[in-house]
Length: 140
Image (spheres, one colour):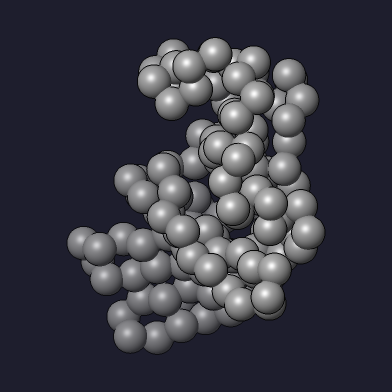
């Protein structure tokens, strides 16, 4: 069914306008949040997002790094869930790496805005859904 996860899932990530990230809150409950398209990816193993340092998800990821990211292709009714961990990065290098010109509308002080940070998601496995079937796969 899924011959090349890196290629198939990579294309889904690149075409997705919105992604969903899930984290565990302080009471142990899962929470899912819509996110803008990832800023960068290294295959399907590492995926970078921009977000607000003051957000609840950042607070939760600092306490528990376990995460899931979901991408959907509505046109073909398929999706993929990636499981892994998130690192909250606030270094100038990480922030500059994924900064885009239009980001100033969200972060008034630019790339050095203290409310701007990077989420680096590292996947360990995934589950692909297509044609009313699903398949698990490992990420090397």
